[in-house]
Length: 160
Image (cartoon, rainbow, N blue to C red):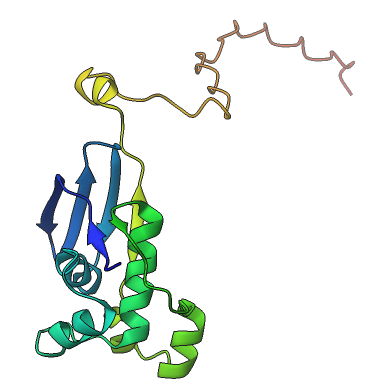
């Protein structure tokens, strides 16, 4: 089967990145332009080769390995179903093959999962507190002030 994205995804571009939210599973993710371009073509009508061909004439041309990496990450996040039966290259292997130039790294698709609060937590207006695994620091107490002790009597020496 061809890759198909879930319906009902909310996608918004913010500063060159794409924020994605799936209301049905409460999953949020950040995608770069390459991964967003792949996601946009996952309508179920295109196979892997057709996606690569469709991207060839765009601002984000990707090869088969890059598209497989993007699809794999989109499947891992849970917003795309039906990963093609081809080996998924690792990001490390792709960087070795291409070289670690900054332009190459920026062109690789990436998908980062974001922890999204539940609807009840998001609408409660309550800001989450510190993590329960870390104890809350004790409140700062004012430094106590002690009275100044009386001066010590100076020793009295017999005059010379």
